[in-house]
Image: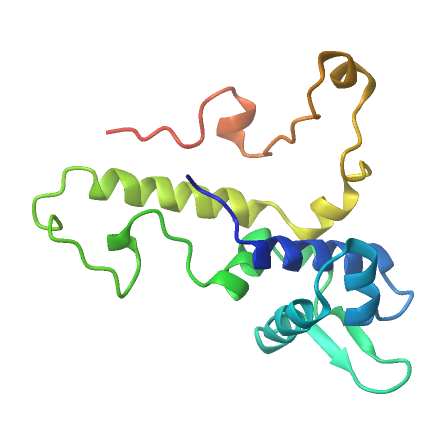
Amino acid sequence: MLRLSKKADYALISMKHLALRGDRGSSSAREIAGQYDIPIELLAKILQRLVRRGLLVSQQGTRGGYQLARVPSQISVADVIQAIDGPVTVTACTSEEGTCEQYAKCNVRDPLWRVRERILAALGECTIAELASDSHEAGARDASSAAAGRLKTPTLKSPAYAAGADPLHVRR
């Protein structure tokens, strides 16, 4: 199962929060943690890692806090996830330290590598600006989806996805 870590979730929540603030100044770790019920100690470590990776800037002092280092349209979801969790991997052999006893005989290594590349491309296309432009709050449902009991499904903007193709389909 492909799943983001809780740290990556918190990082993306924080990045969206800061993008929505825009030019209205910085936000403290305490402010963000309080608004989204995130443990302050964990969030402080996450925000510092984002600073070290060049995605946020921090300011000390009474008016201090965190701001995006670049405009939201220049920061991808992939940038944030990789800053927090490291390289995106699908299998053990797609990580630098990963080793596998079946490596030499594996018949799915190359197709799964292409899947990984497509996942990275999709995450790279989605920006913090796109996350911030989503006006739906957590748990909000649109009228038609509420009747069906489903949350509104986000869409990817890739040409293959828009044309109805499965963006993770591996071709040989």
